[in-house]
Length: 191
Image (cartoon, helix red, strand yellow):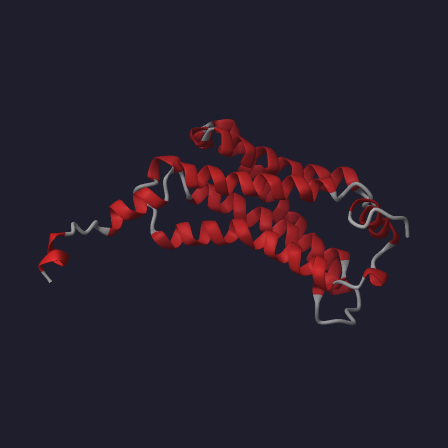
């Protein structure tokens, strides 16, 4: 027992400061930049690609900036761009929900409809940029472990959902513009 009392015990704040340092924030933003970049790329064959590529490219660039230099999060231009983009995404969610509710939903899974998938993508953008505004570089030592856990979870959830969707979908139910991009890039064949 004497050996145990000789081991110094760190308090939770010191442990949190070691785990949740700016590099953790940079890595999480790097993951999200990759996700948003991939999300923008797969919009190539969408019926309205320019709109959706811009919607996903903007958070990709914002996350890339934070992955390179997290202190730019306090810059006026970064804040203005992030808040404006979140507002646009919230309006787009409301619009897509109105379209989804007006259509007759034959399935309980909204991901079977294009509007449902659009809503999920927009909510991921809103959630991540919202976390970016809550988690500031200056307050790393004051940030609770719950917020860091949420940050890490939100940065991994898009990849898990995308992987789940890719492994469980029915390729025959996809629209023609989706089949073309999938066949060319995932299966390396033409459908």
